[in-house]
Length: 113
Picture: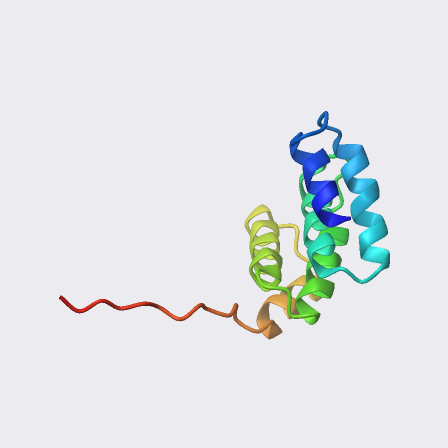
């Protein structure tokens, strides 16, 4: 369902329809799909296909991060830091950024010549 939503969001193989993507993401979120939480959060964060709602975006990112979805902590921190820069912080957002685990890093491949 998430992949179909991404097709609608980006107009790949179907006519672009971000509202349909949001509908599909919501259904996937209801089924506890963490990638859908990130995609729907991005729609809320940027006001694409849904009314802009940064607090809802942060809630979805946090929910995905709690499910160990790669990239969710990074999205959450970036969203919070953006709010800090604009002066739109809440006590909860500051608490989240202080207590979130750092993003996992993939092992590096070192080549010695």
